[in-house]
Image 1 (tube, helix red, strand yellow):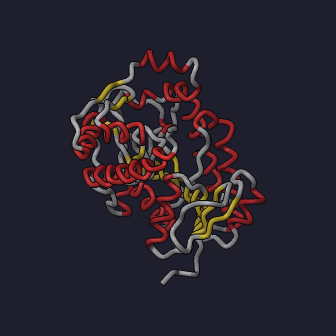
Image 2 (tube, one colour):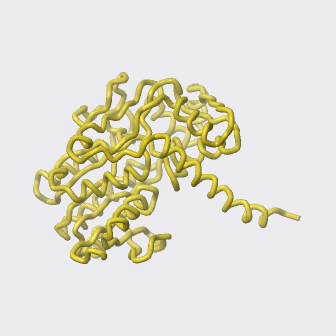
Image 3 (cartoon, one colour):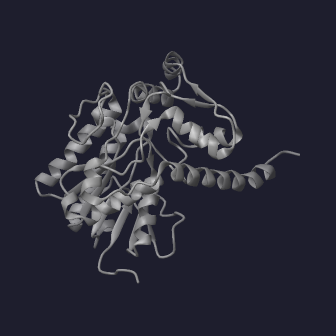
Length: 326
């Protein structure tokens, strides 16, 4: 029986937004999903509406009656400083007008390089990149709005994520696609450093928990993470699941920097490669101690992801053959 005395509004239909929707539907919560087109493949009963997250007039209308608002929006990777803050500001205004809790998805760029120190929520914001600086200023704006009493905020943070439906990620299609074909996987930095990878379903579950619990408000939390292994070990687990011999090929740092001179996306990746040039371990112990351990075992998460990619590749095959020229 669906609970009708609350409404959960989710902005963004990327992997995180879809993961939040799946978790809310599993809990029989009424869900309104918002993106620019007003179209998305969603479970039965989920309302999908068009809207501009950066337009406070639009967000106030879309958030009307909301109990919890989830900001799962993202901006083009090459345009974070220009486009990301307005998206957050618009969703914040909508949640504030509705008197709803605001749960925001963040990453860990704002901490900057740590020299291999374990990432905990009390680290200073010491970003050295433009995307990290943007994220830091956005986080500060959220917490300031909470402490001023404008809106009740909880922040969830996670590392590079993977999982079913995750394509555009450091461990998305560029890793799982080649592994399924037995081809070499190209990686940033040193693959023998430990690096935390977050499973998308656990991120969705964690954000919903933050929306349910009053004690989550007013701070940031590192969302559930699986055990941390090296990038090489993580990719070897993927290859083992595909049945192919592991092949890992690091991208030379100088090559990445050179490509950045002509390719904007390569330039953005180059400024973040420090995350793969030192141990990068995200500590989720605060979340676990307060809300319990909700992380899917890494082996199971990899298995489920490989299975999804297999089905996805098969679903593309007929279309590819139809498009072939005679």
